[in-house]
Amino acid sequence: MVPGELFLTDWDRVADTKRDFFLTSVNKEKNMTVQKKQIILTTFFFAALLFLLQLFQVPAQVESEGDKATESKAIKEYKNDKGFLERDYGDGIIMVYIPPGKFTMGSFTMGSYEGINHEKPTHDVYLDGYWIGKYEVTLAQYKAFVSETGHQALPSYASTYSPGDNHPVVGISWEDAAAYCKWLSGKLGVRFNFKLPTEAQWEKAARGTDNREYPWGNKVPDKTLANFASNVGKTVPVGSYSEGASPYGLLDMAGNVWEWCQDWYDGKYYYLAPSLTNPSGPQIGISRVMRGGCWDSGAIFLRCAARYGITPSFRGIIVGFRLCQDNH
Image (cartoon, rainbow, N blue to C red; front, side, top):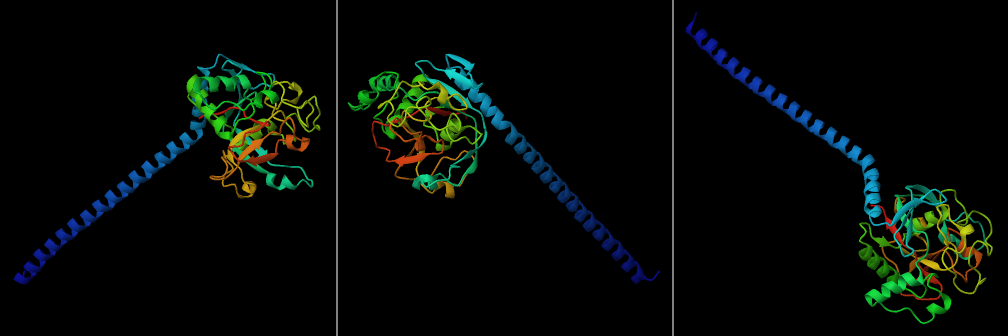
């Protein structure tokens, strides 16, 4: 063998060794990269799986936790004659459970009434389960709040148009109603605070899921179904019109007193609504929503879709409210 050949052969061996080392390192890096990708993909897969499981399980858990939280504070629990769960907290405070699901919100009425456009277009809305008062808040219930807190007393005319303790309270502003809800939440120690219903919560509780025109159905209102059109000339005791009950067994959802809702009012909101799941109304405004009509209203304001807005500081002989609780 020629000395040069030995040199070249040794060099080739060194080169082969370096090449083998390099290739081995590259393969190791490739294997590590593949392993990292597998780990990342596996982690992502299980994270996504966990998210999906939580997505489908959380609502049920939330509903269950809400049930337990409110159940411990209720004096008794039972199903009403419509088959829906009711919880009695005493002192006439009874809450009815509205199950989660979709309903169609807005007006189906075709007519010349100029305000009808702010009730359109109709749109499907999904709401989580919630609780809402079976009755409007009464004069006696509100007086207890004023007595215990020193909150502003009712105007003198309140007793004229709501002459009995079991009549709905009148002469209260939106701020008064919100303050009552906060006080009652603390007094009863409930986990999920009392509040005013959103406009969507109010309408579903009044109408149900069958697109009815009025809480009791599609029959034109008369004096056996609601207190309206000055048939009586003032409020009547809450729950006086059992034939006018809503699909969930709520009473006085039409007539007696207009009811404050949580939302700001916007006549164009239905066209611009950003969410069809648990909508809470516009972010800002100058008026708050009222629903349900009153003892002095015409029949057109008793429709489930009828809505009206007025400044939240307004106090009058036609406005009251009812309680609501989210279930989460």
